[in-house]
Image (cartoon, rainbow, N blue to C red; front, side, top):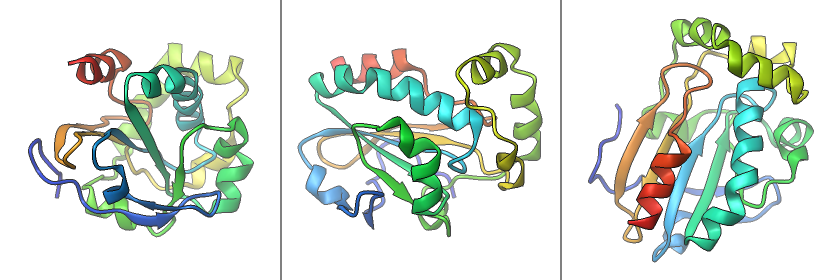
Length: 177
């Protein structure tokens, strides 16, 4: 079931790819972008990860913490998304436990729609993120959640295709207000 605004964020207690335990309760008092990606080899996800990494320091200066999930094993994340050295935790969730808790869904149509985003596909190729391995991943769509200092969800964003995430403008507006 999809989550909605004003719901308490589902508690997270999991180990990230560096072996650190991530507990959502320890983030109380901070704003959080909780972002869910597909498999670690997903070119759409790696492009978005690349873009988030470029903005991460700016967001941290504004008081926003980022926590990312991939539905892959730790080793695969390190091979693909993790090699970009993100300055925030990435949690492997190959059994999609938290994907289920946060209401993320599958969509074959979402896979097809993403393939027709020519500008995104072009950026995938020019940034070296193309990978055929991602074709074997299931069709889970991405999602983003903006969580306030009290652990309450203030904004949910369920992607409509593999490359569809909350806009950086929406994140910035939320953090600054």
